Image 1 (tube, one colour):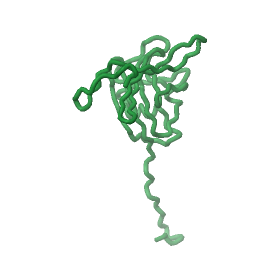
Image 2 (image 1 turned 30 degrees about the horizontal axis):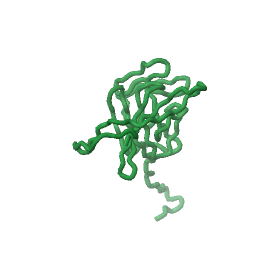
Image 3 (image 1 turned 90 degrees about the vertical axis):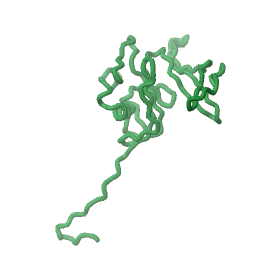
Length: 178
């Protein structure tokens, strides 16, 4: 029932549900996978939450060090692994298999993104796994300087990888990475 006007009673609103954005995050270290979250709910609003916000929330404050650089926020350490591979070395990222042209602190999430944070430099290849119609394909993506001096993203199949499922060897990837 509505409070009577002038009765001194206050209307109370239902508590608002916390807004979240669903993302998947994988952190690839120097020599091993450091962490994986699949379809994680991160507090924030689609169109406002950044890739850096998602990394902070999922990795946890005790597991990262960040700084502000000329291109925005970047992580100098994740899980104790620190930058140090030269001018473009350190923690890089890709979203849905593509390397954005902005820092993690500037990349705005809409929800449903697959984020890979990896340790390396512009020449580092990062792995991608795809499953389509029951076929697993492994590729490696990275940046390469083209003949015109421009950097372009390249993708290559990863042949000869032994694939295991639930502890059982299924076979090796072929020349096309599948």
